[in-house]
Amino acid sequence: MDYYEDMEVGDVTEHGSKTMTKAEIIEFATKYDPQPFHLDEEAAEETFFGGLAASGWHTAAVCMRLLVDGVLRDQASMGAAGVDELRWKRPVYPGDTLSVRVEVLEKDPDPNDPTRGRVRSKLTGLNQDGDPVISWEGLGLVARREPADAEE
Amino acid sequence: MDYYEDMEVGDVTEHGSKTMTKAEIIEFATKYDPQPFHLDEEAAEETFFGGLAASGWHTAAVCMRLLVDGVLRDQASMGAAGVDELRWKRPVYPGDTLSVRVEVLEKDPDPNDPTRGRVRSKLTGLNQDGDPVISWEGLGLVARREPADAEE
Figure 1 (cartoon, rainbow over the protein chains, first blue to last red):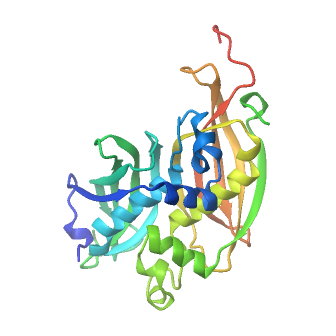
Figure 2: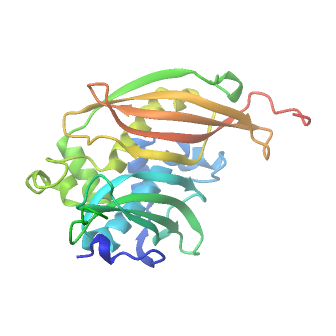
């Protein structure tokens, strides 16, 4: 299990992969983002996407799954406060295969909780051509192996 | 249909609602965020959530659905570039009923595309007590009714 103490600023790791299917794109969009360009191939052809494309929230959710499987399962994660600068950079189409790159940007002890630290990481979702399709900066909370000293 | 010209900075609207079920929380988490506190009631009791809680990405997706039904269906939306400052403010538990409040923060013509404008809106997801559970600033792109003049 990786704790706060084990994380190093500048660490970069890659994890994957997941191929997007037309059925999953339509299923997610039907539940959570029922706009024509996420639901229907013909309607999507007339739009700026030029064809059926995944909801950006679906792309985010798939990248989260790759992050859980690749990183969080082996980390003493205590969740996240949020994400900054989430950007959808390219459409994701059926058949695209996604992977994620994770870079540790910053870490500091949580001033309000000696049992954990705060870790800012940049996640980039890449397609099979290595082109970024999404990115965000995650504000993770990670348990410490040893509680911080009172004077830290 | 609402176009870029119809949106006013300061406009605030509320839309909802959706009640979260245990089955949907577990189904989403199984696919996209399989961490113990989103999957299993007993395991979740031991964690900082104190009980089974929705994935933050599930909460975001449900709020997106309320935004589509309440706002985007009647808007000449051309998607979004991303979101800033997404924050998970409170856990969402089975039985919680969510609604969204949307405020238009800023709008300006897209300097690169005379057919559309950029609209920054704050979305806040609220539970049945009116307490915020999530918020973000969305960077929407909205079609203009009339293309911008060349000199604008």
